[in-house]
Image 1 (cartoon, rainbow, N blue to C red):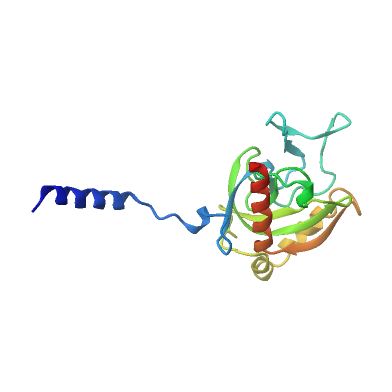
Image 2: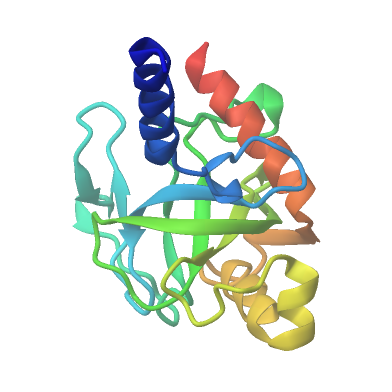
Length: 201
């Protein structure tokens, strides 16, 4: 038998053994597949301190009003809150000119940490008349990690989506934030795709 043929077969088998199957969640831009993103945690679940990423310096810092640290005058955040790096949703596309906001359901995460989470929908909000939508996600280490949609969340865990909507429409004071309700994962994927493209341009 030709030694070159044997060597070729051996190398092919070796290469095939090194190829890993890429799970569907690692292909986020394909419709009908799960959308997994990395979220920078600005505000851990249960806390009141309002932190955000400074777009100029890249530093996570406490927000302030009139030189005083900003504290939420309400219950603590109902879930981890943050943003998706390398995204930008301009006002012309229905955003506020900032990276995409994410609410991730799961155990409290450390401020400044990156959390893998699965996007299941979007909460359509307006802040004093300006669009301020929030992607809704489930943290990878959450006991609810099997949930794939807002409808499934509402069916299996009644009250969670209502709590989140009630919190965000009241934490700034009565009438300042309004909600048009939830949209499904397809709408969330479309928003994500627009924000990724806008950041790249």
